[in-house]
Structure formats: C-alpha cells, structure tokens
Image (tube, rainbow, N blue to C red):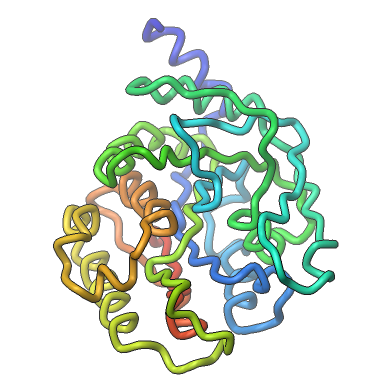
Length: 278
C-alpha cells in the first residue's frame, strides 16, 4: 500500500476539530446491561457532552469477549446483538441493541494496521462487552458501532504496540472503548454484587490506578512482575488486554481521568477511565 492510498483511506473519516478521548470501561457482569445501579448511572454520564468534545461519528469497541486467532474487524452493516452468556434471567436475553454497523470505517481501520494482516468478519456482532455498556451510554443506539478482535495467541506487549497504529482514529471522530476488567477472577466471585472485596483485588486495583496516574504503562504491560495480587487478579488475561489497547493510544502529555471506581462481586474491578478533556 502506498502512502497516498493510506491518506485517501483515512480521509474518509473526516478530520475533527478536537481529538476524541479513549476510554476503558470495566463492564463486569452481563446483568449490568439491565441493572439500575451506581455503575450504570456513571455509564450514562460517560456518553454525555461534558465527557466528549463532540458526539462520536462511530464507536470502536475492543472487547474481552471477542478472542480470535489473528486480528479481525467487524464489517457487518447491521451487527446482531450477541447474548454470549448463560444462566441469567430471561429479560437479559430479550435485550437488543440495534445500532448500525460501520463497515466503511471498519475497512479504513483495517488499512491503518500495517504490522499484521487484518481479517474482515461479517459473522460476529456486538457481544456483551459492547452492548451492555453502550445501551447505557447511548440508549438510542443511533451511533454506528464496530469491533476489533483480540488475537489471544499474542503477548501483552504485542497488543500494546498494535494499539499505536489506531491512534489516527482519535482525530477522525471515532470513540475507541476498551471493554474488560482490570481485576477479573471468576473462581473467587461472590454472587452478591456488594460483597466485601478481597484484599488482593483492592491492592491490585490500587496498583493499576497508581501506574496509570504515573503513565508507567510498561509496568502494566508486564503485569506478571507486579506480584501475587496481580496473579490473583488476572488468572487469565482476556479481560485485561482491552486496557492495553487504550494505553497504547494515549499521548504522553495527556492526563487520565477516573470515571468510576468500585469492586463488584468481591473479585471484579469496575474501574473505568478515559483521557481527560483539555
């Protein structure tokens, strides 16, 4: 691909006056999709004008629930709502989030990534890492949404570096959301949403907050070196990796704003953050 071809592709986005923030959202239990609690109220505020310089032209979600071999991008013009969970109340399975897709934006995003081959996918939809969050942020479902998968066969450093290739989206009106959880240990979970958090969950959540404030992102990429609390908090890193995509898109001069802090179900960090508005 020639340089002029890339310029033509990215110009399809349309330049925005201000750079869009990037967000990490701890989505937690699928039940948050229909819950009325402090977390879902906070999500509603994240989608409002004071959190963003302008309404998004499209939303790209990098979700813990789309794990693939290789990197895929969702090009469906009308992605279905995926109920990728079991054992929950029937009301949750009836929820639909009928946002339009963004196939042109998705294909342009594919062209931005030059380090690896990106596969176009029109079979996936909006998994619960996307729609349980977006239905509170944008309940009218009128903003185009697409997803980028996580190649689960790659290292944390791979994902952090890949994210840098997506930075141009921020100046093209795309709101990029990483959806996962910093602390996510289902083996230790309590069925009570308001259960007392484990000490190790509180400790690691605080460690991550500290490193975020200091822009010590390399420490967070190499989380295995952060001690026993990290290992208990991240028994598998599927929910942690979306955060690394967001870190890879943050500029060195940007402050980080924490938009929600809580531990749900004793072992799930609901911490959310975004780059601060200037």
